[in-house]
Length: 67
Image (cartoon, rainbow, N blue to C red):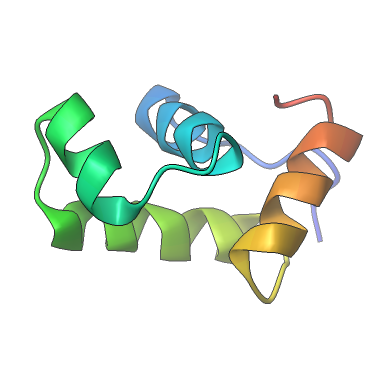
């Protein structure tokens, strides 16, 4: 797994809001996205960081200094 995965600016933005505890619905309202788009971003970020869930994703993002 790449130790420095490439995340889009939007993925980083979504990940930051997830790390703040916002729900998909809250994130979608704040970023003017559909809930399905937020779910897709979360799924893609989790995959790119090699994680199994959002909690591990946030922990890994801090380890990599992405947040």
